[in-house]
Amino acid sequence: MSRPQYHYASGQELPAIQINWAQRDTDGGTSALALSTSYSSPTVVVKLRDTGDTLLTKSADITLADTYPNLVISWTAADMTSIRAAIVTALGAVSDNGDVCSLTITARRTADSLDAVFSPKDLPTIEILP
View: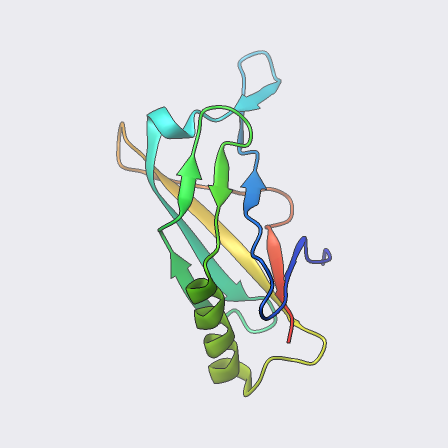
């Protein structure tokens, strides 16, 4: 498994996660998926990597664009408080070494209301530190 890409400690400023969501072009290359004009209702599901427990489902503070980075996830202090509380419920406490969470990201295609799922080789991950 890959190492966490983002680390969040208690009381820390919460930097946004910027994602380049690509699509295959007809010539075999890739380009930015036009998220702001073709998609809506982005959702991020935060799951505890070790157990698969869902810690948070987030649909606010997610920005869609048509150029890279075309998806930006902004975190609030309330998001992190909710994630920490869910970790305590699932595990009894936040681990001294931190707990790794994976992010499943979806967006609804406006043309047919089907959900697209961001599916890179490794899902984006965050580590919640004590």
